[in-house]
Image 1: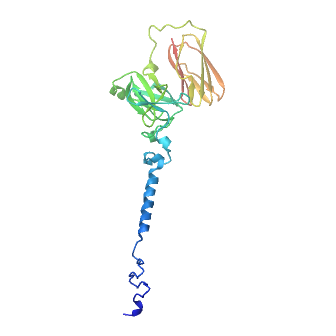
Image 2 (image 1 turned 30 degrees about the vertical axis):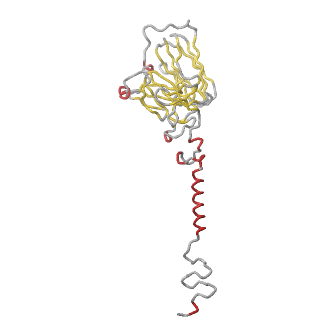
Image 3 (image 1 turned 90 degrees about the vertical axis):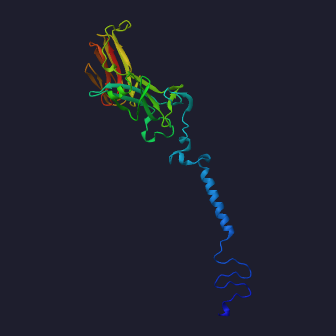
Length: 301
């Protein structure tokens, strides 16, 4: 063996990497300090990850949704319930969700239910998530008993579902948040009701007492952003009297009185007056054709 490759007195390492007299580490040795530094960095990264959203894991809400939204901080959760096991989520009256309901007999089976909502939109893709103001779904109740969950403005109510629910006449639509709490104003659920069968009912043999007849009945209605003001209701009219429908719409449409076949155009932004004589008894709907909005119901006795 060549003596030039043997370790010299200064402790220079040979080809095998054997330590010299100075005690320097060989090439295969990992510094202890490096390992400790790597471990410290790993712990710091884990702590920083856990600190997101106020120290809680962020997987409880969808990416792009803030923690404030995900915790459902919209409104105040009350201890009271809506009568069907869902807690109330109270919000201020101004800007609160609104709903109106109307029912029409279907030509083949059951009823067509129409929900008109304000400050609210249906969000079927996020049901079960956080409560965000102005979002969610509706539930239908028949005489107070749960009937169906609704994710849009229209719902077909078949006779078979009515029979399965045990029958009933009073239909109620109530608005809920995505977390299934019931939207409420003044500790009362946001809801509206209608009675099945009224659209085809006939006058009773003995009509209810009415105020002293006047020469005519005037009904003022405005339509703006798809909402009817005042909310659709019933107007009592004595047979033979003159009816004046004063309607103003923010979009072009057509005003139509069913049963009397009275119709006129509604130019956008203009007030139109439709006058006719109520010479037929019964219940007649007044609606718009293009937007399909129920404006009022005339009860002629």
